[in-house]
Length: 401
Image 1 (cartoon, one colour):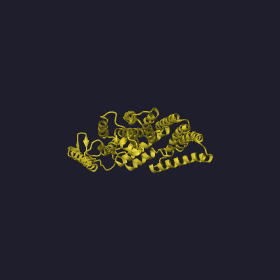
Image 2 (cartoon, one colour):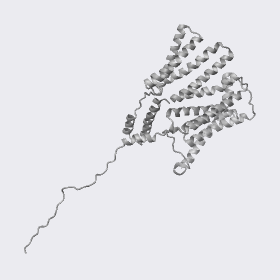
Image 3 (spheres, helix red, strand yellow):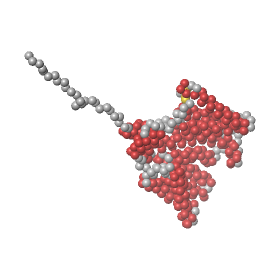
Image 4 (tube, one colour):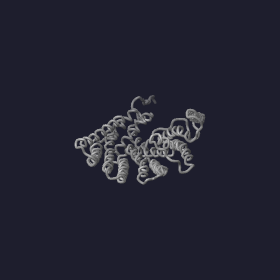
């Protein structure tokens, strides 16, 4: 990651953690404000709505800048290629040098859109001139453009830690087996699905192993790895769920795939369609991982809707009603069972909400920032000699002899 983001994200993370501590009542508002002042980020930040607007405005502006000379000069494929080759490094330079290093923007949408446009125009510069080179050459050029986009998205993810670039890289990776199938003339679509399953499985395992050391990673990398992991899980789920291939292919593309190579492949896919959500829920609960929990919940709902194409118990309304009542009853039953235990828990499970946001290993740094701001306790002064207030009783000698 670039040096500017590496230092800036650390400050942002400490300030955000101090705010979470204030909301939890662990520190006062004055302490949180003092931490925010001491660790004030040097980067310019915007909210999500402005970020989306800036990204859309940047895309529209760059496309207009490219289209204007193309329309005025009436350029053909060669001219468009030259314009893409000119604007691709220009967009990357403006984003990296002027906006990030110069204006110190922090994920404001404009620099992300410029970098993505730079990669896209570089891929177009390879794909556009191949239009007149013959069918086979055109397909090879499109494959090369695909690989350029995949490599560019990976490079931007590594350098800047953008989750959007990671998602784009996963989309390009998921489309690669289908592109290879077109180039190599694979006649069996099941082979393409198997290659896709292997690639997504490798990506999911790699991202999961990297997230095991999230305490030593910066937030941009953590977000990117989370994006890769969830995208891989989603791709694997769609790959084994034949509903996404058979029914959607028939309705959207007008193409019906052939029968399965193995007679038991439908049964395995149906079993995996039910197992994957349960495995995601189990891993999310065991590791207190909110992303996996949400994926497990969403994929479980989708499995309820699609398993009817494997197991026919009746009409669709009755099946959905029965499945919904079963899930709701199971949830209420588990909550009552947990609350009936000692201290509202049974073993390591509890009915209380424990899924707090991760601190990403910054608790020690936040403690070091907050500790000097804590009020010092007043110690009682030691009692010393107190002058005055006392009397000396001196007895005079009296009497005669």
